[in-house]
Image 1 (cartoon, one colour):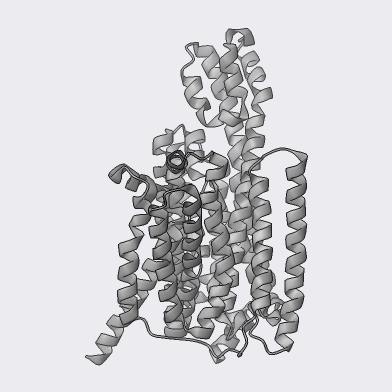
Image 2 (cartoon, rainbow, N blue to C red):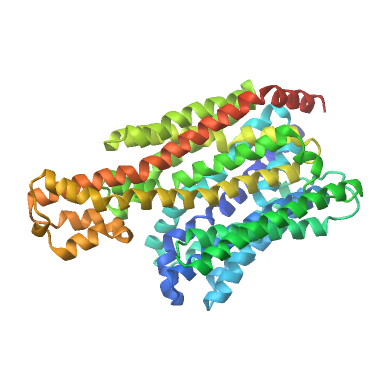
Length: 526
């Protein structure tokens, strides 16, 4: 009876962790469904309004490694409950914000609460569950984290359709957060690691500044605002971020020698398997970046309406959930190295098929499901297990760094993919005359306003609708061919890039497989 009660409490504790991870990750993308509505509500420009997303991402990146270390030091149950409380208060503040300034402040508070939930949950699993179950548990946590990021926009659209208000996107977190606090207090057990006496405040400050500086540079650069002053600002921020991070490394090396509880111990950075796992995490972040463009891919390549394009994310989202569970299963059965190789091969087929072989809705569904399974495999257990094996006793800090590395990949890749899209549609300037000539149509047969609208790179989202309204069959056919060719040129590189990153992951784990396997053996002996 006592054993059954203990098992029930353990399962309930894991469900609480899963819900917490899902709630925090969901708010990383749910706002995008209501961004235009929120901007209108506060009467701010789209550029300024985008900081509702950016500031949450910045807060997550800064908070994640810090909370991982604090959880190791003061207890994971305690920090989990604190994080949930901060996230809930931030969510209420966002929903009730009377102006945009308080909205941004509340989003920042919300990110401070959401940044550590996944890290604490992963470290808690590694500390409380036996090694035979850890792979599956970590796989479900990683899958929940990834799936929530993917379906966030769809959930946001659904809530707005049902309630008619963007405020409910955040108010819904309040009762969930209160429930997690109550049941978490009763069901979670406290775990912590023995740590040194002094906290690395200098390291925390330098790491936060370096992340903030680089991510500001990325977001300013991705805004595509032209002008020499802004270009110099981006360059200066990047150089400043590198300099501050270099100083951080020197400080961490010194702190370790002085018996201070370093936020990121230098000994971990010098370990090849840990460093390579961080690279793998960064590459996996590009998968999420590629997945974000699935709705626009469906709209531009398959002529799905903008209102329904988001629902075409569903096959990939469901498949990624299956993949996350499968990834955990295979980690338990054959280890993280072979699982990553398998995940890479599946991802190459899925993303490569989306890029090169997707011509119909059926092929799109097939390859998006395959890509989703590979995507889920990677987001699940294997990278967390590799990191845990390499980190030894410093699991919280290491998993926090893993999450930040993935976040950097997610932040960088959309800017790269946006450049691919811009470059692809810029080819319309030459494609349209070529296709009109091939169909024996003079450019004078096309209204000047229509031609200008179609050839404007900023309006490609509405090009298909504009083309459909043209009465001439020959003109419409020529423009359709030009648009289709440009759209493929815009989106094919995104998924070829993701396939290339999957190939790089396979190469890395094969090169370092002996060292990774040695970490596995060492971890088993602990």
